[in-house]
Length: 456
Image 1 (cartoon, rainbow, N blue to C red):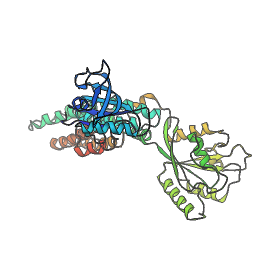
Image 2: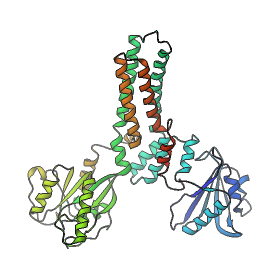
Image 3: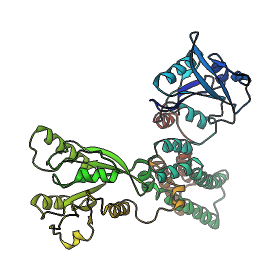
Image 4: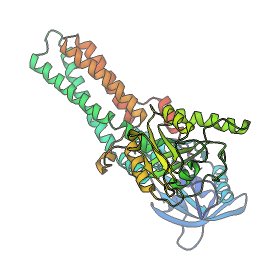
């Protein structure tokens, strides 16, 4: 538990019906009562109110009323942080929430650091580190699949498997260290084989977890898809269609798009970061040249290219040049203006994978979404797949654990000194423990929770 009481606005800044100012700490109710005045017959001071009740009243500061509020009283340990928590619901908007927070801070609370509420939940044993990261994933989820995967991690599905893996490695380490206490006795061949088999199981288990990294990255940060092609083939129109709203300016004048435009679309449950680029051609002026330069940068960062061609025109020299340029890139050919008479002829090997659409009528858009999903995530997205999807930090820790475990296994097979086997096993145990925070350093915690927003 911590000695100070922290406070922050926990809802997004801006106009809205409600805003919430959260307090957490052993003095949360005492701090709240210095600026909260109960109103009505049934309302009570926060310090004497029963747990998990709502109190109506007013926040005052400097002798004047700031706002009418409802305060949720939640006593430790049945709270998110496992500390006493008061959540003040005031009117939404920048000013009411700020003034309520000012009153709370003037009453003795300290402004919370980014992610400090969740950090306290972790340090007080309410959640482990993987579950803490899931809180951020829930906040940043952009599709229902991403939200479902984050909720599974928050529920502890990944943590359960990590704890099981760590326990298995700890059991093996304990067995090796027991033999170190009696150096005059060699490990029996059958015992050595059993230890090797146990390490093989641990390695296989790590491989299963590591195999989920790619899908986990897709759901958390999305896939960058660049929309490219020569001017006036319908790139911006395609972006608008995939987003379901007019985001980019469209016109029949070539070179309308002068800069890259990035927006995230929900494509069959997957977050896809669409990047509309300036038409690739010889620039007509300095502004267009800068737009084309940025388009080239976006292309270099893209994980998939949507190459748009005009199906109503013959293949032009620029089209052929781009087909050659993107031949080695993960790409999907989109034949736009399919509502017009077809004049475009493609080689058979390219035509087979192309998708015809009309950005004017919307025809072919569903087929394009299906093709996009298949390029990004092959096969069916099953509910059980969402239960365990590691992030890049987990991936790094498990890779280090796997290397150490493999080294320990090989050392056992080669009858290397058990001291060295134990060293590698300790490295593996510590690396696995990093995933759930059993062996987390202060720098690691600062790095993770520093990415959270204020009030969470």
